[in-house]
Image (cartoon, rainbow, N blue to C red):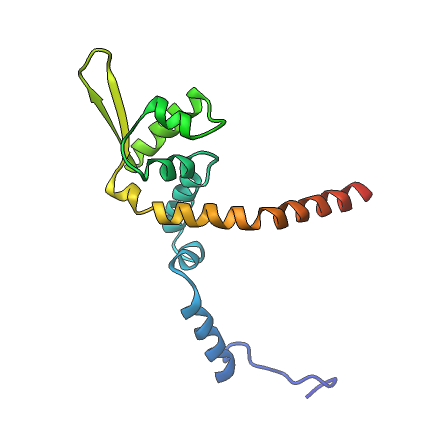
Length: 154
């Protein structure tokens, strides 16, 4: 012991430290492991989160949970979304296999959108995230206001 401090061997952690480390590892989700580990898996997770984490995708998914809708019906159910943004969002969701677009050879032409089986797996998550955001929105807004006030005072 030198200067009141005990020398520890970093290469050989104590059994208590090893236990704590293994307990933390078992508590990590597969998402956390993917972010910490394999770069390609982390990229895949980020890509999916970028898709469903944008402003409109989860709203489109949640709206389509009731079933097949035409473009104008879908747009009517999502306040504030522009024609162009709904078009882009639907194309991206279709590309990712979350939405299917059905075109009917009728006059006038009819196009309908519905969730795929893969898209339906996101419905409960989309609703849960929306419920969480609604429940915590006042606290988040209060935190933002306090932060902005502190920053303005600096």
